[in-house]
Every structure is written in structure tokens, then in C-alpha cells.
Image 1: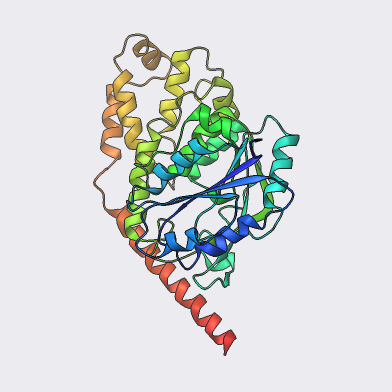
Image 2: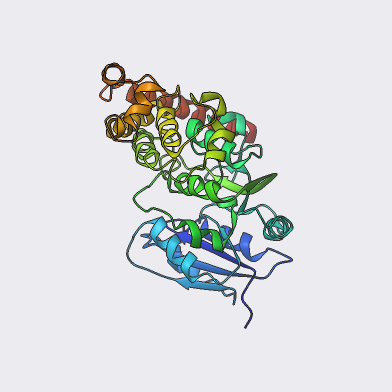
Length: 363
């Protein structure tokens, strides 16, 4: 039996009212051969029963009574996948067109250097009604232009996650080379994956909207809640530790040339120092987690043989500079939490406004 071109994978959890629509949007795909691997991650509702009722030879179902986490389940499905390419879909979203897979496979076939292809998103509410992007604080976040690998690293470093995971079509060989998703990250495992991905492969963002992305306030990791927002900050800190690992000299110059202090980066020591100093650059979105990580990293090398002379003589940095940075980066300042709470209140008002407008139209 020949292997399928695409393996579609779904880690389902507590989406009994949505999962059939998600599954059907995959089964309706035309012009491409695929297998569909679905795992229920210990749902407490009837999600597993809905999936089990689907009768299609392309579907393989892996039920479970234990909730282990979406990344654990997704990683297992990737390992089971027989396809050359892998597509991911959430159990509460659905694909809007029947050529989604065929369209993306052609892109990757025509561009063998590209590791993965993504697209933009439509937004829908719990009832499947469209939500205009202008009504969401980050409604256009996935409307990204294409960039080089170094430019993507800069975008991720200063902006954060801006790629829509359930639009992905990726070569399975990419996962085999860069590794799987980290289940300890609840909010940003995909962001962590994109950072690792673009260090090794170019990626492509289509202008087509390839997913109907469901917004369910308060019910999921994508909901704009205080807990989720605080967790995002902490996960940015953890991810930042390894952000510049294996970033090449060429990629650093390509993405950050205007911020480098020694432009030509003449040695590996200079490369390491330049990466560390970028953590202290101005960053309105992710500034504090990066700066705290910068303190940890610069502290390790200030007196380390091979670095101390370069740092002192070429960068003019010493213990007095470090003392100043230690006084400026206040890790205990609660302002960020207050900003999160204020943003959450504004988001809730926006959702109520949308609900009011929709009700008015129906009347």
C-alpha cells in the first residue's frame, strides 16, 4: 500500500458540538490523497462518541480516557503519520475550501526549499457566525507578509507569535529534524516551533484564508484572559533562553544588522555577545522577559575567559554597566499585570458590542 501524500492530524478535546464540522471539512478535500489521524485527549463530553460515529476509511481514531495535553497527543500523531506532508486542524475550527490541501501541496512541491506553508484566518463565534477582524484586538495578526529567515526571527523576537497554526502544511521531515512540540508550553508551543523552524527552513505565508478560526471567550488557550496573558509572558521568558541558539552569523546580520554594535561580527565570541545584547534592545511587547534573560546571559560571560577582554575593550561594558542594568530592569513591578487586566476589560466590551450588533441585525 502506498503512503498518503498528506497526513491530517487532529487532537480533539471537549468539542462535541464542533468536531463533526471540523472532520467533514477535511473529508471534503479534493484532488489529494490523505489519511486522517484523530485522537481524543480524554474529553469529558461526547467528543469521542461523535468521532467514533464517523465512517470513512481515511479516518483512524485513537480514543483515550486520560487528558494528557494537546502537544503530547499531537506529537504522537506526528510519529504515526505516514504522509510526506502533515496538516494540523483544531477540533473546533474548520477549513473553508475543498482545495486547501491540494493548493498547499502544490506550493511545497513547486518550492522544495520551503519547509512549511501557512495562510490567513477567518474568525467565527461559537455559533459559527462570522466575526469581522476589526472587532478583535488582534484580528489582523495572521495577515503577514513573506520574509527571509533572518527577518522572521526579528519579527518573532519583537512581536511574538503571528502565524496561524491550523493553516499549516509542513514536511514531516521538518519535525524529524527540529523536534516536536513542547507540552510544558500551554500558550506558545507553536511559537516555539516556528522559531526553531525558520532557523532551518524558509516558510511561505499565503494571502488566502485557509481556516475558519473559532473564537470562544474564556473557553480555550486562545481566549484573552488574565491567566492566559500572564502565562504568555512567562512562556516568552522560557522560550527566550534558546531564541538565538543556532542562529547563524548571516541570519543575525540579515535580521538585526541595524542593531548590531560590531557590524561585521568577526568571531564566534562577537556573535555570542551581539545575540545577548539584543535582549536589552527596546521591545514594547516582550521587553521585560527578554531583559531579564539578558541579565542572566551577560552575567555568565562578563568575566569568562575569551569574552572579558572583548566586552571591556570593544563594547566598553563593565560591572558598572551591569549594575546600572540591574537597577533598571524591575522584575517585580506589577504594571504589566494591570495592563493585562485593562486589556481584558476592553476585549470583553468589544465582544459585548459585537453580540449587540449581531442581535440587532437579526431583529
